[in-house]
Length: 238
Image (tube, rainbow, N blue to C red):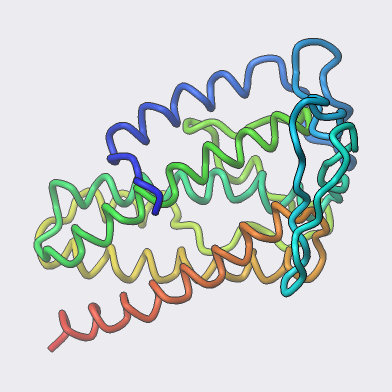
């Protein structure tokens, strides 16, 4: 079983990794860029000949043992993979901002606990996605960026769904107690619904296995949290 980092550690690691990943990366383009020429790990380069390799099989299929010098790597990204990951980074970042507010403003222990779990889950996912973007040689959204700058709707793809606007975030930051709990649950339900919509889109059109596995996790995990938050919201309104 994985031990998840505390929210404070996850936020510190996230800030360091995002800054490092953003340095020297090229801007988003329609096709993924070639990996950097020096020092950067190439996911398709031959493995150390002294290390045995195991290629995971497709769902329901066994793993396959490969020759030590066989080239192992995920297939190239298409623009749907890139759009999903590049939009999901600021999408997750806003969820962390909402969850951080709950630490001092939530009245319900259930809401506070949910917020902590969201931080513990989505913080490491941002680190993971930032690393993938770095591998592809494309820009990583930063915490201070305008999320709309990363929306790929203008590129012919589904846009970033479920984001709270500035007015909604300000209202959440100004609320406390039961009123905060209500706004948090309403906002996070909408936020999660947007993430699920984006995940379903890339599961239909994406091609990179790692991206599709993450999208499947987002779809399953956040759908379950939506159902739970609706029950919590019903409890507040009684």
